[in-house]
Image (tube, rainbow, N blue to C red; front, side):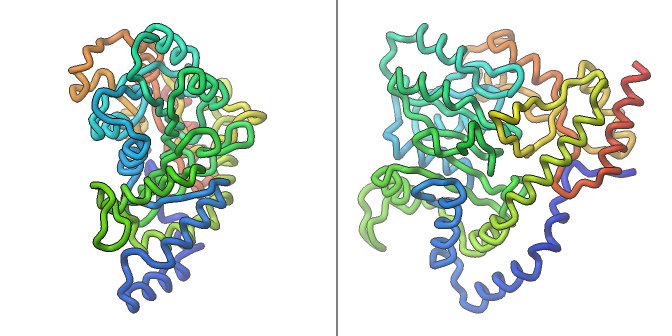
Length: 374
C-alpha cells in the first residue's frame, strides 16, 4: 500500500463549491489585493484566537520579521529561540539586524525549556541587549507559556510566539497570542489552516502595537502616498483570505480528526520500541500538525518504510546551531544535547485529518515488522 506523507486533497470535497464560487467572484470583480474579504478573515481569525487584532501578511517568515521590527528590535539586540525549528525563526532575527541565540528544548514536548532559558539569562545577566524570546510551538503542541512568561516578565523581555504549527492549540485553555506580546502564524498549504499558496498573520492585543505592525506590513503607509516610515510589502491577497476564511470554519473539526487519528496511532504503537508524542490532556490541547515518534534506528526505519511505499519526514534533521548558516555563532556538537539527541531519532509519520485507519494500521504494522527484525 502506497501512503503519502500528507494528502491535502482530503478536505477539498467539504469546501470545493464554496471556494470556487469565491474565486470566481474575485476574478469577476478583479479585486485581488485588500478589500472586505481581508477584513472579514482578519476579524474572524481574531475571534478564533481570542485576540483583539489580526494583521494578515505574505507568509509566516514575514510575520516574524515584521513583529520584531514593530517591537523595536534591531542591530545590537539579541533574541533567544530554540535550535529545533525551521530556519525562518532564526532568519527573522538576523533580518532585522539583531543576533539570534539559542537555548535547548524539553525532552518530552520538543519546546523551549524554561529552566534552560532561566540558566541562560542568569549566566548573561550583565548583558543589557537581550530583548526578546521566540518560543516555538512545534508539531501542534504549545510551549509551557506560564513558566516562560514569568521569566520574560522578570527579565523584561518581549515575547513573540512562533505559532506556525499550532493553529487551534491550547496551553491551560489559552492559545497562541493569549500569552505573549505577539503570536505569528504561517498559512503555508500544509499547515492545519493552510492557504492555496503562501500566507501569514500576526495576532496582537495591544492596539498601538497592532497599528504599527499593520503599517510595517504595508510600506509604513498612513494613506496611499503618505508613509510614516519605511516598511515592507507583505500582504495577504484576497483569494487566499477567502480560502482561509472558508477553511477556518472547519478548523476545529479537522483538528478533532487529527486528535482522534493521533490517539489511534498511539494506541497501536503501545508496546513498540519507540517514543510516541507526549501530551497531558489536562494542560495541552495538541493539534497534531505532525505525528512525530522517536526510534533508535530512525534512518534504517525510514528506508524500510520507503521500500514499503510509505513516505515519512524529519522535522528537523540538522539543528540550527549546527547549520553552516550559523557557523559564525561558534556553536559545536554537544552544546544543545537534548535537541541533538532528538534530531537523530525523530521521524514524522504520514498524517493528515482524513488519513484512513487502515493506512495507520499499515504504517504501524510496517514499523513493528522492522523492529521485530532488529
